[in-house]
Length: 338
Image (cartoon, rainbow, N blue to C red; front, side, top):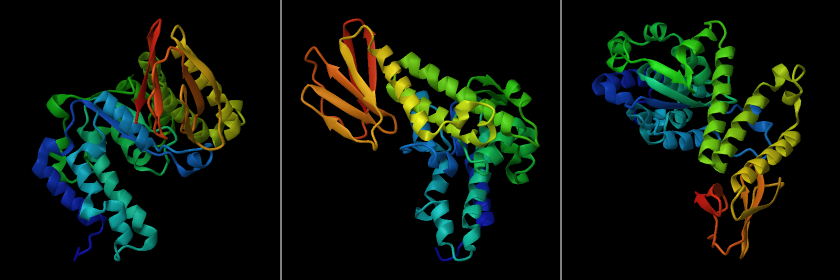
């Protein structure tokens, strides 16, 4: 690009594009999903950490048919800005000082995230356990959720009319099934932590409920990821008050293994599939055998599944995740999710 742009110039382009696109700029059908993090501190303190919250959010949004900001036209514009994306563009921008490159890129995404939140109505879900307190979700999206009338006043007058009212007068009704009026009781302009905690706890409850309802091991592992991230996130604050927050990552890994084994056991109950055992390997890996397939679920240990009645289980990819459905007394299906 011949003429390099700073954050303000990119934001001005975005506002013009939003004005042209109108409602199509952040199109959705009353369902949206937010994601953030986890922070570096959280990633550092989880044994075998692999999946980011974006990975987990993508899976959840697809299942719920909810829109991520990535799916919107403006989101795609930023992801593909100048062919590399806003963050990479700022890294290469010679006009921006090295210490300001991430700040400038975050400023752009923060503006777009505010507009995205203002466009929402209906039901919102999240994958934000362990989010960074300096990130866009915490600094921009939470206050926009809680006080949209004030947030509208912070955007250019040129586009305020597009966001002054929700689509057809509709408002956001729930966040992780929590009514918005209850969420706002936990929010003050000076203190976001209680509101974030409510969102995180409701997120974990929703994830666990869905895993049990769908008998999905993949969803149960995602729930465990979120819960561990939440516990690590609150480690510094609450480790002296509640022992569970002071557990080491090895202790949490052992606890996780036991709970995953029990969950798989509940899925296998009444079926012809037996649980061989579960252990936490030093590193995620995968092995396959002729009559037994042992899949190492990333981060979560080894679950050995033997099919006794001669059912064939095809070769599994190294990052296979098992979703075990045993709803019929004498039949179990093994579905491989790539």
